[in-house]
Image 1 (cartoon, helix red, strand yellow):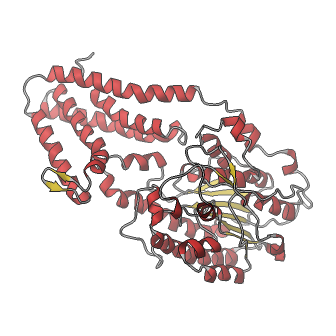
Image 2: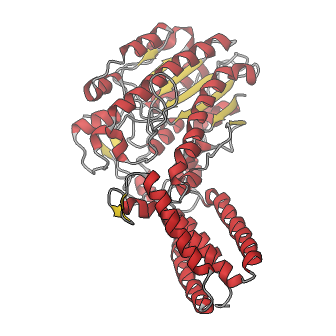
Image 3: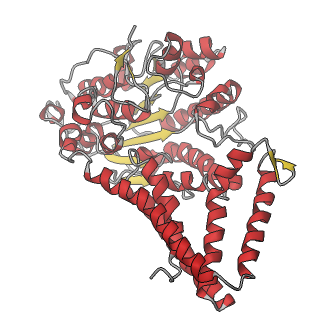
Length: 507
């Protein structure tokens, strides 16, 4: 068995499971299946082709493994040598490092091709090495999966309670279409003024002129997207999860399920609404199996596949592969949302669209054209580029104004439109998420855009400090005769490392 060339397949699977093991708290196993399938098919195809060329299965297997070692180690090698001397040259960007790394890999491949002896020993060593490497992440994944909390928690958090379905005044009323538009990391006017030195009042005034109420003192209930959306879409605070999941856990999959199968959409579907979901490119809001219609425009949308590409020799070309997909997804969603009244017929429709802008990467300039130098390294340091953030925010402003005009023009019944951020930006964090952030950090992160268009002049019920947890409580009470009442508006900070260690930060 050890003399068989099985190591290419093991080396092909190792980076997939390694990346999954390091992100298991936020990815479901099915998300890695397409990448696994591609790697298996590619490996078998390479082995068959090279075996035919070399007429030697062991040599073909070693060549494939060498190719994979260079292919998968590219990103780590680039980060290690960037700005330093490599093969006699200073590495300044992928244009220098990519050809150098490719040349080195070809030299090693050539050495293997012309080797005549010792292939059996090399095969045995590679088989053992690849098996040990793959065993480590696979065993970790198995242990983690076996130790996951039972799924019964979902029933407590995502199924509508009796009060949610009670109190409908008039079953024959023509319900308004509801658009829930999430603009990721869009800070409120105070944040933009104080932190970014930017006056956003022209956009706020333009919304007000169209009939919107913009809550100037609105804050996010939570500092992280998966907490904020789960809270808003289920109309409840999530602090009970500290006891359910544990303060030290960073498990996100339960929150992702709460976002997908949420109380708001479940209630509206029970009243005859069509649930239209728009692909975002981010795990929890990429696809929703509970929606009646899922809108997506093609391209790479699998979050794991995008992260996987960044670790390989495809990384220099990611802005063309991933960036084009991301920018086209944003433009597609803005376009289709405006057409929704015509697409879905007489309705009523509940549309959920999570835009990953103005959050980085910075795909658009203020002129509403794509950027040629988009940043795709999604880490805290990208927030430091305030100018790029503001340009993308201005792009969003222009698209939202046009979208609102199209929705209002195409709607048969005056709709409900909610344009809301999940949290604010994070330029003051400096790439880290402290357990005890400063007041300045909290003001930037928690202050959010929160604007709503309500039919029949009902904007007066939308008060200046309302938070997302109360958005649909207010709407359901006003338009569906429910009796939820409003919760006290509170904000909680937590870090990515300990998302369930909540700190009350209202003051």
